[in-house]
Image 1 (spheres, helix red, strand yellow):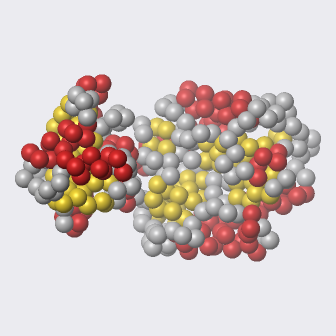
Image 2 (image 1 turned 90 degrees about the vertical axis):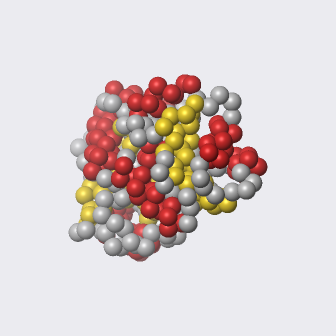
Image 3 (image 1 turned 45 degrees about the vertical axis):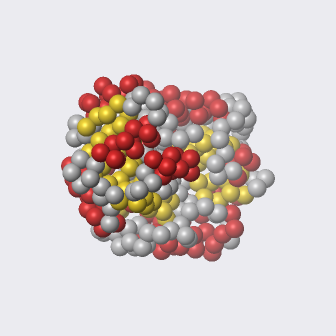
Length: 358
């Protein structure tokens, strides 16, 4: 945490600020170690305070050892404002993408003589340290094991909801604190929905089944998507699958430190365009993963990342989604290196046909 605080204080100096108020939970955890769901950090050049309520005082004391723990009894923003006024400062940053308008209005009212400036701190989390990479590696291993298990569950007559529940329960048994996000299970024609959450639809023979899910290990997320076929795949299903797989492999091969998010996205996207399915791949190629399931950097046509850096962690997840037919998405989580990337996800990407006749 000392290195992270030093990095933050250097950032504040470059921004011309003397302090920052942090309320985004991922950033609260990143800079303090506190994993509770109610807390705000006030960090200056020489002090670090964590304001929370009675429920979290003991937890905060154990987790945020570098911070002075301050209890609030009514309004946390009122208490934050009081603490700011105790500091010899006038220029204060706040997380512009996290504070609501009402929350900012309360701060501005209490701190009318202070200069308040919106800042973004998420970019300070994009390069992962060794401990973060190991935690994500563990989360990925949990989701890989859950995929192996779910292959024994999927069959005609099983609902998407059951598949999602079994995935989540398996990950819990293996050490995941919660699902990384609402588990996506989309079968048959519902596969054309990129974010098709599980329903009570029954899986039937001939369905493609797309599953997008992840684990959370000590706060860090994994993200994996695999598409399988129940029974033997027909020629069209196999064509779509192979196009997505080839694009995904090409995307993984293109990931490397020094390349831009747009550049990497464009390589995989052009492959799908050349295959005649460009209009059916409408989302970005990938995104960062860490304390949040979606974070910087982005791999997309609108990415603002000019250069990937070593130890960034991103997903590579192209897809093709055909209305009234279904869809395919294949996704890995990878660590960026100076010579390419290391794929953390180990689940097979070859087309798996469950129960298909040889």
